[in-house]
Length: 180
Image (tube, rainbow, N blue to C red; front, side, top):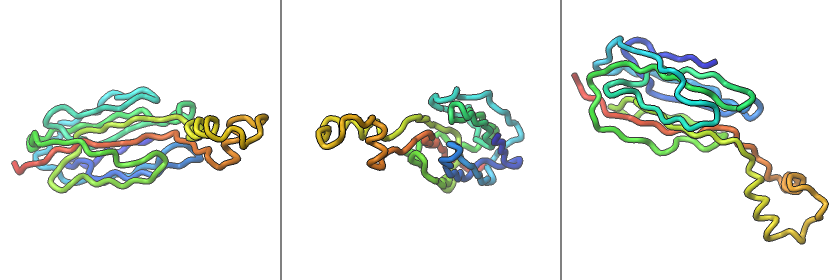
């Protein structure tokens, strides 16, 4: 179980994550920053996604993300997420979504840009093995070069192309902060 919340008056300023292929899960670390005009009026959302489903979450207007909580399912090899949103009257309407900050199975470290705050998260999950796409190429272009009694997976794995992607990609929404 992951349960992280910034101290009062702060919001998430950085997110670091590394995927572990053995457990098909990520290890998480967060940083916090002082947030202009942040009140102690905070709340936890209910879970914003089901397993293997897209996350498209934004705190309500004039709120920042100050915490994240999730739990992992070994059956789904995925997490369900909740967010802690705190009110701040110093957030402008000047907001944008980042591009995706990670590829599947890759480490990432992302920092909220200077003079900005984190207000949203978007993510999609993938449960697949890379060999499926590669097999289409092999079967259509090189079938005669391989023994016909090998299964698709045996053939593919013998060519070192079986890579499992059971992971999420993330992108974030940030808004600029103004002095209050």
